[in-house]
Length: 303
Image (cartoon, rainbow, N blue to C red):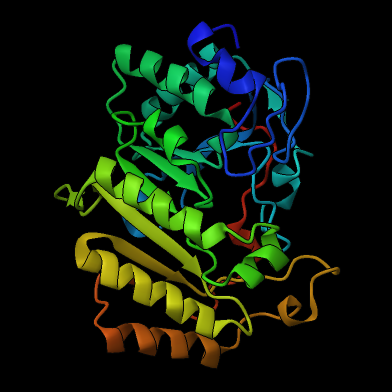
C-alpha cells in the first residue's frame, strides 16, 4: 500500500471492531490474519446468491482471503483462515472488476473485504474512472466499524451484510465477539444511510439498497426471532431479508449443538414468526438448501 491517504489505516489497523492496532505495513497480522498485502482466493461468476443478485448471468464474486469474524461453523473456512490466498496488486484488482463486467456479471460482489477496504476503495475508484458501470455489492459478516464503511460511501450500491447473532453470549461463543449485535446494528444504520431504499431494474435485479442475510442455526431459533423483530421494527419493508436454512456442519470439532443440520421444524418456526410479525419482503429457502455443492472451489479462478 503506497497511497499516503490510506497507509495510516494499515500502520495501526482499526478497520474492524477488533481494533488490533497492529502495523500491517511492516508485516504484522491481526485477527483477520492479513498483513498489508492484498490477497484473493477466487474471482468468477457465482450463481448461488439471492435471485436479485445472481440473476441469469451470475454475480461477479470476488472472494478476499482472511476474515475478521472466523465463525466456528464457517463454510469458507480455508479462505477465512487465509489458508487459500494469492497476492495481487491493487491494479490487478481493478482489472478483475473490468474483466468480470466483460464476462457479463450482473454486479461486482465484494465478499469479506473489510480488512482490505483501503485497497478496495482505490481499485473501485480506478475501475469506475475506466468505465465500470455494474452495481457494486458489499457482502460481509456485518461486524464493521462505521468510520470504515464511510470510506466506501458513493462506491457501494448494494449492501448485503449478515446479521448473525442477537445474543452476546452466542456471538462470543461462535465468533469471539460479544459486541456483535451492537456493532452490526450501527453498521446497518450506516449501510442504509448510504444505499437508501430498495431499487430494482426491469428484470428485478437489485440496483440499490440493503439485503440482510440471516442464517438460522440449530438450537437458536429464539435468537433468530429477536433479530427478525429488530430488523422489521427498524426498517419495515425498506430492506430485503434473506432467511437462510443452508446451515451445513462441515467440521468435526463443532460444539455439540452445531454438529447437526438444521431441523425442518426449527426453520419453519422462524418463518412462521416472520410472517406473524408482518415480514413480507423476504427470501426463504426450500428444503435441501444445505448442500456443500453451493460452496465454490477456491482455486484462484479469475485471480
